[in-house]
Length: 601
Image (tube, rainbow, N blue to C red; front, side, top):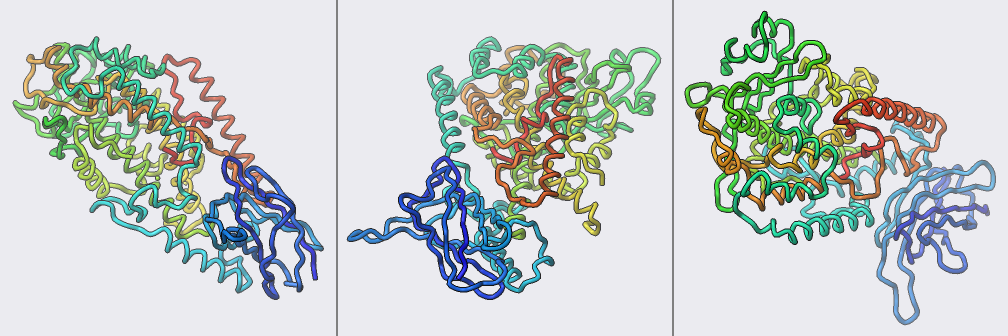
């Protein structure tokens, strides 16, 4: 007979249980019978750490596994109670001889059943020398693969988890109770505020830009106020390709596309004397943003009215020295000709502003469908599901956008055909787009610091790069393209989600009234601003990058690595905050304390 001490830690916030818990100790010789963990009074209350003494009838040998059993208690006359859920953090097992063994759990045990835990030392499969450990690893993987199965949501989309609704999800991959409650409280209060203002049910046009200011006071931020004050300025328009919510499309232009026939005469006023397009192309000071993937995309119907889309090309110029990036020319289609003029900064104010606004609408569609939904949600779901299935122990805006669900689906199908591994790796993406040295590109600067790893998964280095890519895309990349959605869209003309009139086919016809008539209706504007406010606001229960409240690692080496990583992130944060003090518009989206560990909304 041998006496073992068992210490159990239960998570706080509604994680306790009334069920009865017992453990079986699996050793190299045999497995013990279930040993009840039972003290006088109530056990396993939320936030508690409790000690139990158990006696094994026989020596089981060297401890390999801990099998946890949970079942509802039986009451006299009433029979067993309905099973509940318990979130266990860890078990610590202290044998008669030797030091304590920690068995990390950090998961919900829902209802009656059993769970097998390994001691917390991290091991790859080849390190499982005992047949029981190998068998347990295979059984766990098989159970996970049965629980987390793939399905195709739409043809041409990445595969996703085969569940119909959030209610069908396992407790371990749902929002926490606190986060879920906070999300719905925020949504309810924001919806009520818009409803009281009488804006959610108005299907008509905005009466004026001044009337739009009524909604602009809705939860505005310093970055949103900056957008409101500067949205018509060329320098601010261009800067959003670098540090706005879609900082992944701008690329250096070494030659002008044949379907974008910009001439020296068109851009001479911006380039100035003594230079030419060819000279600037050779210098590397011209940049292109091409939304060609939007060409011919299916559009939505809002309030019974068909919406319109454009596939613009925008040529930008990095002025010498520390001058700003500026737009040189905009063409609103991929087919040049008399019905697709090239708009210029020297054009009439409303012609030029309308052209820029069409580009911003294209940015909205590209960002929400591809940069945000596909690259920062659907692909991370693939990574997550693959992890759940293969390693032992994921909200599109459809109703009020210009391209709608069918347009989103088309864009995703098109982009999936172009998607490659290099695009997902920040250093390679920056090199491929030729934007290594463009000044004031804080998404690049901060992202490269956080990436922090140099480059077939045939080598350890390649594996490190692959894991880094997954972590970066599920944390920092998502923060960069998600947290600023409300900042960019709160003043809707800066980032209109839909356009109600077709793109202009000639110059000299744009007016203030026509500009407003092109913008989305009142109710669609409010729908999108509400949604983007929610999607930009973390609903509590934050876990910043580098913070690991679940202590899965028991060895000293990974603990030191975590501490080093946290120290490195703190240094990056201090440098970013110091730089931001000198900026008119601080770039905060990649400040490590503001980055979630994973895609959390």
